[in-house]
Image (cartoon, rainbow, N blue to C red; front, side, top):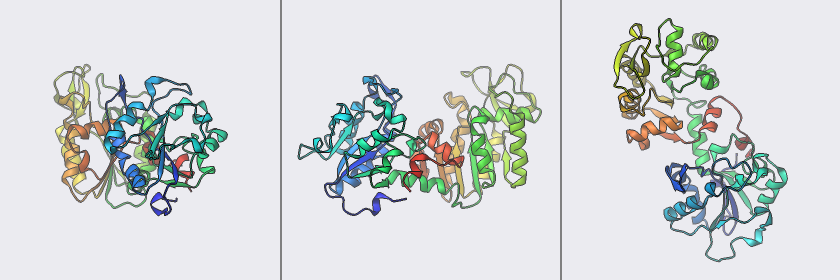
Length: 389
């Protein structure tokens, strides 16, 4: 994979830069700037090298139609303030734009095309659309790992028509994920949560042969608790999971990977209740399991203490209620306290947890990639990455 750091002759080169600026918007206001902050290194890298940057990105799912509520305008305005440069937003029909139409103002160094998903050809991975986009520039750079699981024109097909390179953030993301999948420093532990075990089964299956410990928490752990003969009251669970769980435990024995799930829990009668500690044999019909208990926290602590690498995806409980955020917060503290651990965190809810504890910067790598992050962990080939080889 060619990396943009290895390229030499940048001066005045027009570069199509695929970014993921799909930030949450509420009434045109950005509510989380994390993804914008993560692309600042590649922007500054290219600016310093006197190149001309054409931003390609999407926001939301406009389904190939113009939707002014999903314009890149507020994002360009936010980015302008961060880099102290004007970023003209080119909103006219991209099919009517030619290479010579861009950067007519001598001071323009960075421009943005409007939401690339306003064009139905983008999600169809249309070759003629990709070729037209490629005709606007001299080079293509993908710094949108979080979009790289998509076979879309500006992620996949475009590399057939331009010299193409991996960006700084994309390389960093892949490097971090390699450290928890192939270039592992042991012992290695995965802490995995979420509401449905079936959505994470691909990850668990792929990681079982590679990991020493897999700790299952969150609502998906309820299925494991029930599988082992305990009542879970009115807690969230997924139906018809017995065979999946049996397969997980059988496979874990084959590869000597230890599976850990809650020994005790925090329950309430509703999501907004106070918390009560319960042993697994004391859960009532009207109890709702919403967090892990102190014995479980202590067990997880002992595993973390001897781990050298940790992957964390999914909170331990209903952290939106502070009464049930204890497990997640304790896991965050335990990981960052051990400076010898290489830690990778992914998933929107997990990031929300570490934002609550102000520990985001204390983890070695925090991924905002979502689907691409999960598919990489499943061992799937990502179209956007494959296209760069």
